[in-house]
Length: 70
Image (cartoon, rainbow, N blue to C red):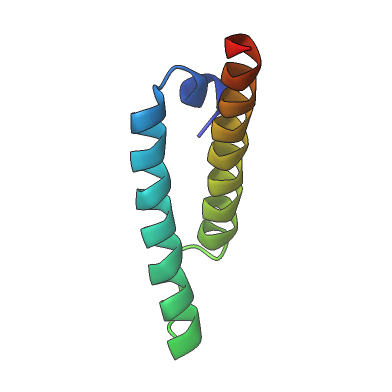
């Protein structure tokens, strides 16, 4: 996912997407632990990067909203 696409989403949508990505990562980690080969070796790495992007964006929005209220 690109940041431009993520910035267009509202917070509830971002949180939903975050939970979906965490479930994907959990499935990938289970496959790695059992020794099953993944469809794409980079899939787990990309999922982690997307989770980090979402968390950064959510944190950024929370800090800017907190600053505006005061």
